[in-house]
Image 1 (cartoon, rainbow, N blue to C red):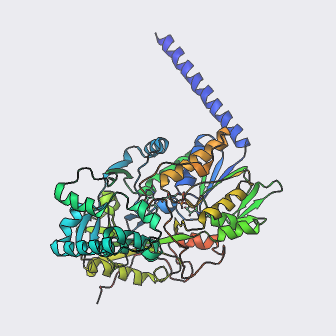
Image 2 (tube, protein in one colour; image 1 turned 135 degrees about the vertical axis):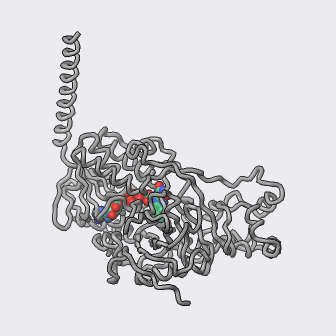
Image 3 (spheres, rainbow, N blue to C red; image 1 turned 90 degrees about the vertical axis):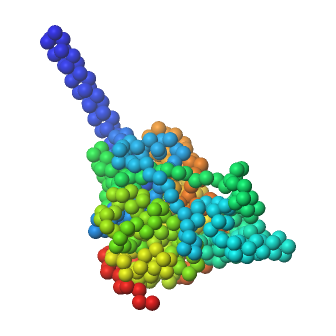
Length: 549
Ligand SMILES: Cc1cc2nc3c(=O)[nH]c(=O)nc-3n(C[C@H](O)[C@H](O)[C@H](O)COP(=O)(O)OP(=O)(O)OC[C@H]3O[C@@H](n4cnc5c(N)ncnc54)[C@H](O)[C@@H]3O)c2cc1C
């Protein structure tokens, strides 16, 4: 009996040893294949790093910032944790879903979704429901809306080229001004007359004035308004927990994640492939590169320089930028929602996040609320270049104006500027991308992935899926076309369909010179530093002066 047990355990040890030797052999064979460099440590870059390390490939992730996670990172200040914009984890891509659960296990919470529109001191269901709107408008306002609607039916806008004309023709001017104008203009930074009618048609699909009235009186049967997801996953300590856990895993498998390492130069060899990638102080000679760097920047970094028409195409790619002003407010939560949309034209804030509703572990002090006021802007405009103290005061005073909290109750605040938050789909972007893509195809060992890496207005699941396909291309010789990867996403973070909104490219207050955004400037501003004017650290603790107005 004892002998048999001893034999069994000897067999097991031998099998384990053989397994380990085999794994070590395949790891060393993989290492001989050379190192793969991954540029950018956001969701896409880390996914690539994770899968490559897991497969025993030598991999190094170069990240410009001092922390991982990119646009989906969680910032922590004084124990308060906040997203740059609230990040829901929801996907139709099974392999992404499985990876999220593998990484976080029980730390991946299932959270209820609640978000409403805040208008005139009232909360309206989102998406707008006719019966709810009508109940909350009140009889007088409803009569005004009805009169304005009837007028629009008689005197129709002759042309229907803009968002404004499209909506006014269908809902009347009054409803347009109450519910459609203000938020749309905040998000996109141009008047609604500059936004395409097609975009409105795609966006406001399913809601008509009469459907709204009908549902107010006869209930919501047959309502075509699409319902949004009711629950989503969320890491206990915010999305950053996902990326930090992935990073540890890459390192445990022998991979390297190098922070504070902005890539500055990419050298092409005679055969057209990448032979070296350089940061300020180091030079790497990878066999393959997976890059999640913005298309604009990748074109800029390559030496010898890309052809002129490619440089011109890249220089015209635009981005909508974004700022989060997180405020710690004395007292209970201001509202139960994860976030609310602010349709009030009198304030600049577009959305407000309530971090405790995302996860109670985000806010360390039960006696305080922590909210994030989100401002959409263009880098260089008046909002973006405002001093941090002024931004904190603005945010506190807007909370008071909205009746959510007295400015004096705001105890601390932190400003985070987020450049290149939204790749812009303007009238020219399709042609520009086609030009850049044709040139990228001539670099055999480079694959672009991710959101700004493909100039694709996507969620993190799509970014990760593009990285998964790029890794498969490397490991198995598959020939996935990364540009065609699709997760059928219909739940964008600002609920915007992938149709491009702008009639013309928006005017930027301080147009960027072609490709003059040096990578170090981008990295600095990602760390929360003002890129052009010395405002000092923007993510810091400041006592906000009470609003004296
Ligand atoms: C306000 C907002 C809300 C969002 N909400 C959601 C949501 O609810 N759910 C969801 O799934 N997605 C959401 N997203 C989208 C999600 O953030 C992105 O899809 C995702 O972060 C893209 O991942 P990425 O790795 O492609 O790019 P990024 O996150 O942009 O990461 C790129 C990384 O590259 C680094 N980098 C840049 N230049 C260099 C350089 N020269 N050298 C080295 N590194 C460099 C950057 O520092 C960054 O870390 C939201 C986005 C925003 C802006």
